[in-house]
Amino acid sequence: MGRCVAAGLVRLPQVSRVVSINLAVPEPNPAKDVGVTGINKRPVDRLVHVRAPGPKTTGLHSGLVGDQIFDIAHHGGDDQAVYAYAREDYDWWQARLSRPLADGLFGENLTTEGVDVNGAVIGERWHVGPRLVLQPTFGRIPCVTFQHKMGEPRWVKTFTRAMRPGAYLRVLEPGDIWAGDPVTVRDRPAHGVTIAQAFRAYLTEPRLLPDLLARDGLPDDLRATLAERLR
Image 1 (cartoon, rainbow, N blue to C red):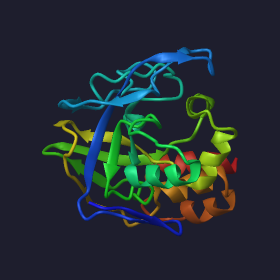
Image 2 (cartoon, rainbow, N blue to C red):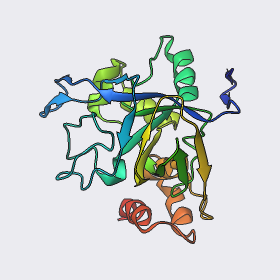
Image 3 (cartoon, rainbow, N blue to C red):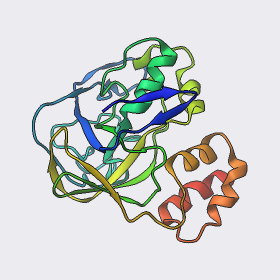
Image 4 (tube, rainbow, N blue to C red):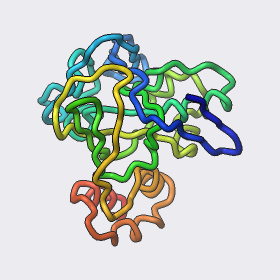
């Protein structure tokens, strides 16, 4: 399937799928006191089981068996069980950074193709492979560990301004997945708030918050997250 990146637009392939499943290879983290980071994700060519990890600090941390999270105060837990990033957005970044970007470099568990990750409506359902069901919860907020990993000056601001955060997802139904498994999006909520819209309102344009908060059917956890920015 071909991809076209031109004039800021991305043409998605007709087939939506998982391009790669990426698990952590721990490495030193001089950017934080934790000392070790699991942001270094590498593709694996095997079946991976995905399940809800439980609470952020006391559970299993990552939703993928075999993955590791070390900064448990800020990452992991049920609402951040899985992180997905689109290969199309990697291609966009490659053109702007003039460097190759491998699947997993941004620390995502699932690299997708043909899925509008940033346009995902929070609360919709992703059916991945035969049984796994995931639900987008919020966009990825960049941190100093990510900036250190990329080696790009002012990367936190650059990534934020691009409005291509990728999506965290919770696990609604556990399942086993392989790279290449199809992704089918179903049950889009009527509130229409996307990952990109919530990310933009939360981080860079708080004037958008009242409109989003006025939407009927907004999930309680998302409403609470957005409302805290108005305090």
